[in-house]
Amino acid sequence: MQLPMMRSFTQFLQSARIATVRLQVPQCACRFSTSRTLLTSTTDTSSSIPNFDRYNALDNPRILITGGLGQLGPGLAKLLRKKYGEDNVILSDIIKAPKHILESGPYVFADILDPKNLQQIIVNERIDWLIHFGALLSAVGEMDVPLAVKVNIEGVHNVMELAKRYKLRIFIPSTIGAFGPDSPRNPTPDLTIQRPRTIYGVSKVHTELFGEYYHYKHGVDFRSLRFPGVISAETTPGGGTTDYAVEIFEDALITGKHVCYLRPDAMLPMMYIDDCLRGVVEMLEAPQEQLKLRTYNIAAMSFSPEIITDAIRKHMPHFETEYKPDSRQDIADSWPQAFDDSRARNDWGWTHHYDLDGMVKLMLELKRKFMKLDLPQTKAART
Image (tube, rainbow, N blue to C red; front, side, top):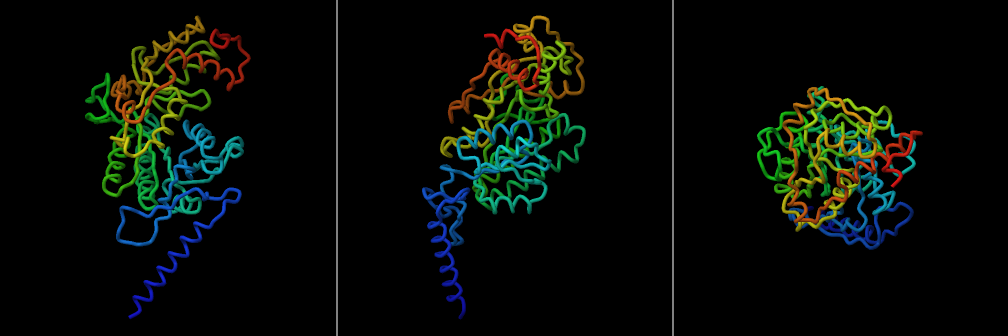
């Protein structure tokens, strides 16, 4: 006999909540804007309670970046804050942030292995998009496989479940390491056999398939890009097999000589960081109907240590590279030599801006600046 009364009370609460949200006026770092339109869920018909996370967040999304103090997080946060507002992009990690990070915008502690901690941030900050960068890279992962399993697999489970619960658009990067020696290497297409031989690669294949499953089973807006080696002047290498392509510039400027842990002919796909970050933003913003895949290859160039050494010598003729391959060469031998990213170019308009010569010139200029080296000007800096 009390059921009709309870149902009426629920309907009353729903009406009150809708009115409260619609009447809220932006103040300071307010979470809603008057231009946002609320949408009710179109997939869950079992409940009449409005879904407050399904409003049109593209106009001004609230974004959380986990694992944000790695190579990509700070730069992506800067780019997104310029587009969507400083207070709408929250950088997070489990380590103490340096002063310049704290001064650049919101930063919080977020442990991807603690779902309650993540849930609290998502709810309190009304997050719309979740960008998950937390992972151990290839060479580091091989040194501590149990930790890599926890971070790279359990962490993905945690963020994906929260994306399902709160209807988040979620981006998790994949990698060239998701392929193995049985994959075609030159070029490697989006859809092909994937049998990686590192825990990093295994965890990324798991991420791709897990994300697709949650998309088709639960409607989660999962998006991913397979990154090649990413080259940046501002960040410290984090233990990846392609990190020589960053270290080589520091050595060129400091000592004029680089000792490479790969063979001179070890060809791998690479990309300058500005192209990489722009690719993330463009895919996040792409309309759902344009995405024929949930995971795409993207690339810009392929080169070997020998090729990039020759490119640096155009600016520093006396630069030398010595080759002492180690266990990372075995990893490189199982990876693609070149990516076929034609699907990304055709489906949502991906294109790169930096080729090898342009990247080398810019890296020498920026490395000198960030390392504050009092060295003679290179040809690149003079032109």
